[in-house]
Image 1 (cartoon, helix red, strand yellow):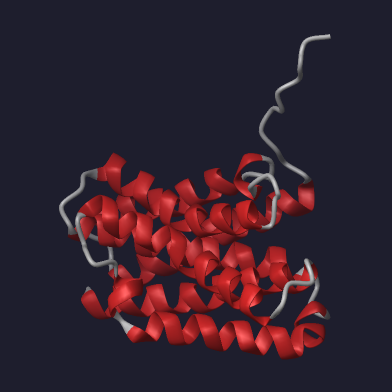
Image 2: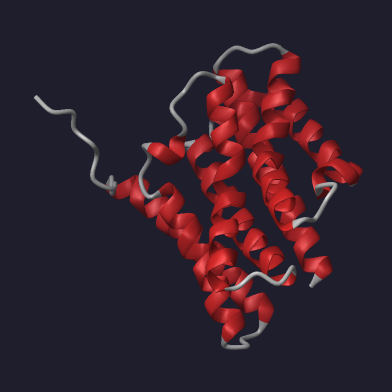
Length: 204
């Protein structure tokens, strides 16, 4: 379980670091600014999760691999942003994958620290959306989670698959794959179809 959690966390860190760095490049930030967005997008949700479950210091601050992966992804994106941008909808696609990986990792870690099903689902969701919220705030954007097509809902679904799978004692690798696929697939499908929750309308 420990090895799986760390592996998922590191994969999610790299994917979200790319997403954060791309946002920094698109906003024409300098190298330091791109690296800051890379780090906070990749680690913000995990830091909040670890703080809330008492896993302190947070993994991102005590394991050098999180910082190294964030910086590496930021540097690659800073110098090769054009290559990454040639992917179709790169930020959204990368972000959707990172969302799925972190939602699953967050739910598993919450369960490992004794949280029940509801708490594990909520912390899985928080792990997925936290870094992106901080990233968007730093570039003066309304956080994607507050306006995008089924963003937090997708993370909640991925975490829910993990909670259900572990409750049924299903093989953990299959549960992990199913959770990531459910979250990422729902997010990408919602983007393609334009599915959104009802939007608030101010009174006339």
